[in-house]
Length: 365
Length: 268
Image (cartoon, rainbow over all chains, first blue to last red; front, side):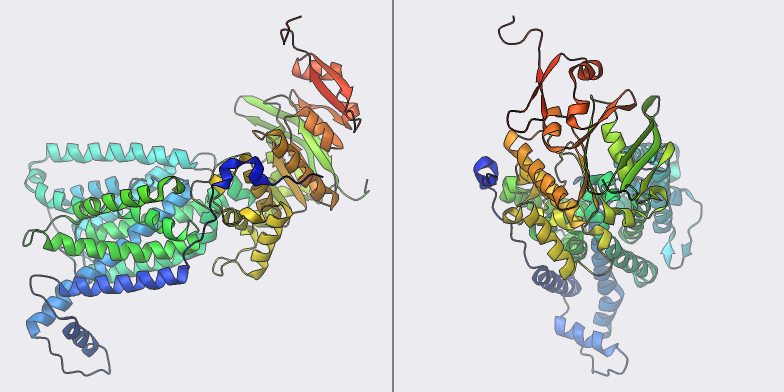
């Protein structure tokens, strides 16, 4: 038998360089450090600058069994505990949730353009928020205002509608899901526009709706976090169970099935987790774009596409990114606050394009 | 041929896509250690039969048995440890390396919380070496040549530790060297005990490597047996509607098909 070297036969692959992935633990450590730095910066920067050490003392003093003499003034303490801390924690959780949801949907659908909102969540949330503004009363349930609550319900209802529509004969093919998501979203946006056009009340409240739709952390507080944070953290942990399944989806749904994956069951759970993460994020911050689309791509370029490392690294990177974006959102034009979605897009797009060009042809998404 | 139950058996399977019958009561028993090629014109059902054998499709009538157990009653994970499928050529949606692709073959052994262990890594390296792909382990799958990609996909299937290997047109779109190389390697695996069933487009390659051919036509098995039994001029004329001549291979003696075009070179 003649063994001809494959490289001789295929000049194309001679050029292909061996790929060395970054060590995941080093990357996790760096991203963890980055997140810590972002959180500290987010807590200290603002109209009233707070010293990091003062905050640390105040924070430690709040722990049981620790009794430090806090150096922060009562005003500083209030700003820190009631405003800054819930705000940076919300931004971190939303960033982690959206980046993870993006990674989940991109992996599941083998589609690098899938983002957390593709499956109808954004439109559903928008319609939910619009309907909440229509209601003649305002209420708070479990610390959540009516608008975020209605957005949460709307987002999940839209995903259920999309999934049900795409589901025939026991299957929900990826391409049908994408199409159904697109169509349902278009319809819901039209519905929202119609509601706004028909209702004077809504037109008066348009600014409130607009602010919600653009996303932001201006209204962060502990009460919504108490409900939403466990939901986000629980879903983030649960995604770990599906990391190897998401890898198998790279060979297509039929390929995944022949690798032993219960495809339809796995797909339903992954969509449910992604939808929960997105809806929870919407509840905290309205619709923040771009994080879920670009963060997983940036992480893949460094760590590769295996979901065991991609999911946790995306969560950490997404959290840091959104905390940083929020700092900019409230400082660049202070005292005016720029919608954080504007910052994520203006900052994220050039960064992403830079990575894309630097990677050149080597990066096949 | 062993007298025990067939390794993989389709028993009177019927399958139709809406409005289009594909297979009508087709039976095929593949003994352990056999190497079988499914042949037939386009849309004759070879890929469908392969997908039924792998459990990707459920027959609408009849059943598929793996070691005498109905496939339908087995968990996907159990099937994946015994039957591995090499899909047709495709590209990866993300920049997985060859090694990472082969690791996907370990999916039926991975537990949700623990990552791949030493046994999984060993199986991956062994599969890469078996297919001669260890040197490209760290390259991007999408950067590899067609032949290399196909060998990596077979390595992925081997990492499943299967008894039966199903290949869907493994030589499609490959140059002649890559075609021979992939089939040489699959043949060697078969000689080491692996049962092989492949949907094949190329009759000559099928005759060169497969001791048993199954010719599908009009939803049923038109003929099966050795290349000498199956590949006859009249039958190929009837099934493919093409004028051909058959002659023995100069060194191996198996029949080879030569096309007799009506308006070929020289236009005689």
